[in-house]
Image (tube, rainbow, N blue to C red; front, top):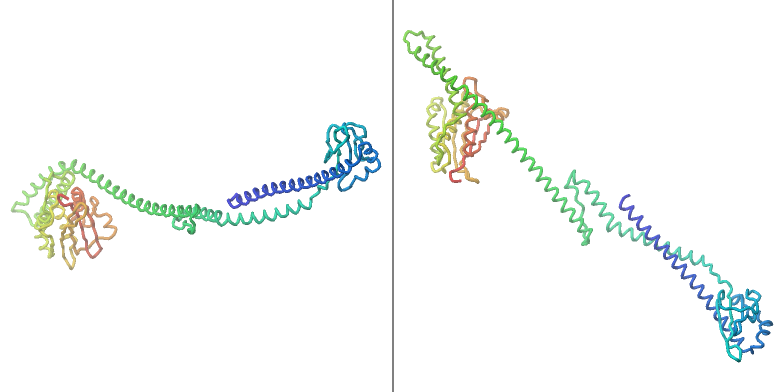
Length: 470
């Protein structure tokens, strides 16, 4: 049952009870009025008869009553009449009266009025007992009229009460109930128009709207927090995957390094010794050069694996990041010039120092420069630029960016950039370790790395290192 139906039933029940109680009260009042009127008539009749008999001598009263007593009977006022002497003996009674003459009466039960008047000369008093005709207590018309008035008044009162309750309570509550069903689906649409009222219902609506606003804010914040937590989880998951791969690479490198390096060193020494012979044909010399280059490449890869898996314990302290970048640029400047590329540097000498290992920071810049130079092959515009600046933040950072005009990377390649053994270079050019080493070294310094690339236009790698004392 809805609130509206309950209110209607409650109002109707209360009004019915009130109507019945009013009807009973009206009936009792009407009946009491009729009874009181009859009693007043009976008392007046008894008084008049007593006055008339008091004027007659006691000895003549019985004869008088026997001859004229019927005259005192009045259909409107007196139905029965009995006269008692001072000894309470019935001297005379009307034929309609059940008291026989000569009987002794000790009370006035059954009579409407009793009146005493002077009796014998010796003393005592006589009594007149009067019985009035049955009063007409049929007041059906009056009751029906009263009930009609009560019914009309009750209907008006029910309508007014219901109208007030509907406007002040029921409709606002129904609006709240309907709006509350929308909170789960759309909190923003669940608000209720506020009423210009200062009572409890108005305050309830305002409190509900405040609650809906808070729910909407919490939901938006929760969605943002869920997205943020999901992003952190995915980032942590990627970090764990990288860490697992790094650990696997370390174990692999430690296990095979000695097995490879020892025979590889002997093979390289033997190949170089044979290459130094004077009687080699040109074809044999070319083959030996290829063999030596291949073994040197194998040795270089193994060395980088070992360095990546178990890096040397470099001394950590305040380092000039400008100096580390310049060392890396000087190391590969010859190759840059030999391949017709241009290196542009904007690295202020007054950059804040960073806390780290200079060799590792130089290796970061060197690997990024090497990757940039490799991407310039067969490109009409061959430029590499290095910029560095203080980036501020909390803690303060130093920002270094290395960009090129090379071939760039596709979105798919960019997603995998930095993964172990993933490379966009040919099988004879890249091992897939350079960028992974860079990311590892940057993060080990408490920094972060970002890669931006557009296929056919170039790549920009930016990394941030915390400033010393930041």
